[in-house]
Structures are given as C-alpha cells and as structure tokens.
Image (cartoon, rainbow over all chains, first blue to last red; front, side):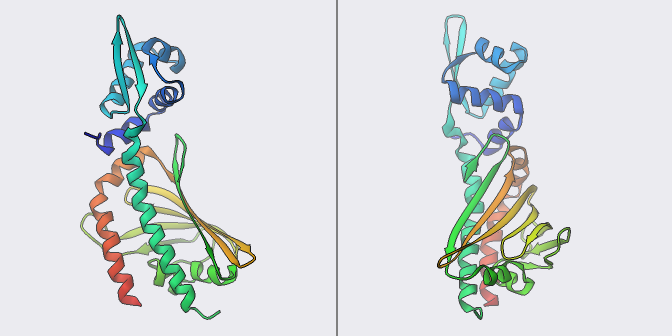
Length: 107
Length: 140
C-alpha cells in the first residue's frame, strides 16, 4: 500500500531528513552509525528521523546482528509526482487554449 | 519536470508558428488572457498585484493572488502565483525561432512543506479544472 502523500511531504520537509534520504539514495545501504556520522546530529535524533522516513515508506530497514541497515525506497516519491501531474495537466490544457486563441487573433 | 531537494518546478515548452510580439499580447492583455487562462485584473507593470479568478468551488474561493515580478516585452514575463496554500512563481520565456517562437512556461518553487495545504484543497483543485473547462468553453 503506498504511503499517504502527506506523510511523504512532511517527511521531506525537514532538511536533516532530506539529507538522510539523499545520502541513502546516493550511497545505497547504510547503517545508523554511518548515517549519524554523515548527518552531524546525535544517533537518537537520526533514529527518530529514520522512523518518520519509514512511516512515509521512503526507507526500508533490515537487522543484521546489532546493526540496523537502511536503504532508500525512491518509489515512495510517487505521490509527489502525482501532485505535479495535476499542475502539468492544467498548463498543457492552457497551452492548447492559448494556441486556439492565437489562431483566431489578427496577425 | 525538474527535481531538487528544496523545491520542484514544472516546465512546459512548445514551438508556436507566431512571432513573439503576438504571443506577448495574448500573455499580457487582460481580455485576451481571460480567453485562454482566467478572468484577471492583470497589468504589465512590475509590482502590480492582481488576481486570477476562477469559479468558486467547495473548499476554494477560486482566487489566485499574484504579483508581477518581471516584464521584458516580447521576451520574459514572471508573476508570483499564490493558490491553494502554495506559493510559486510562473515565468514565461519567449525565444524567436526561424518559424516563430519557442514558448517556455516554468512554474517553480513547489516545496514539500507546502503540500499539506495543497492536499487539503485537492478536492477543490480537481473540481476547479473541471469547472474551468465549462467557464472558458462558455466564453468562446
């Protein structure tokens, strides 16, 4: 089941979470420790951010002994794409109407 | 469609077999803009605040609050576009070509943190598009 668009947007509205998500997109799988070194905030803070990203289904995790590994799920960005599609459909329709108008206008 | 972490843009481009001067008129003369876009009190003056007005629907007044930001006749036009809880900018760029004009529209500044507002008004937006068809269709 896809995440609600609200969760996705709220998750990515925070710059630290965005940085974590981008790092995972770029680097592939990362442990919480590695992400903490990269994010420049405390490990509990990183864990909290990861929980929000997980709720939005932007990341997945797997346990391996005492370490938890995270990776990005870029498909979760689909609700954002839908959002822009609304505007895209609107403007493409306006472009058609503009062309119709230009055809009717005096040169 | 471009995609950066902080904000996103929508870009639509089209070749048109008309000179930039003619397209500029359609983009900047209120009565012509009304024919293809929406009712408005637009003036091609930097700093001018104006509104586009669509038919009000449930959850939305139909009003888009705008402010003119760039007016370079026959070349570039930009206005702030505030609607449905989002604050974006719409920029038109006209480039002459051998056969007419390359017209580019970019709506930029969609930020993830604005979208909670947008989603709340989603129903209104979808009805807006449907109503606009009828309104604009009736004018022609």
